[in-house]
Length: 141
Image (cartoon, rainbow, N blue to C red; front, side, top):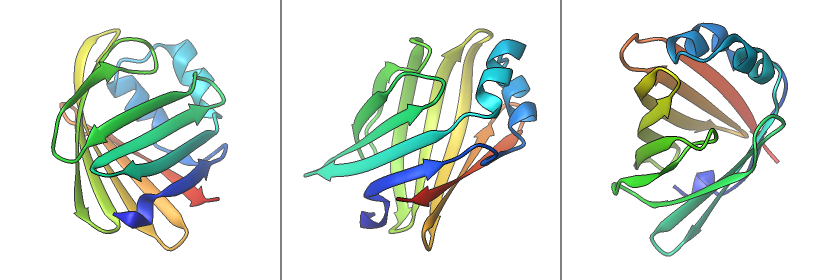
């Protein structure tokens, strides 16, 4: 779990299959275009039993989510709509997050798996109804 602590960056072109994933999520064309070449920073920290991740991108406001492993967090997503998530650590280098997020076309269920391989963190996010997945590669700063 300690492997996640620190700052991670994903540059332009770091996402694969984003277009199909975005369509499965019901994202409008202008949002797809906006996010296609975005850059991202994720900073993980831990205080006792509480994990925090600060997400920042070139196209959305900075958001910090604090949660405890295995306990549901109810909050809002980057668009100000509903978000429910539960994170578990499968190993020291693998985290699974089950999410329900509210969007333009209603609620969507997602499974996000983040896995660390050396100085890379690979995030694979699947929209569960359609089975469509995307990946994003982050590099440790």
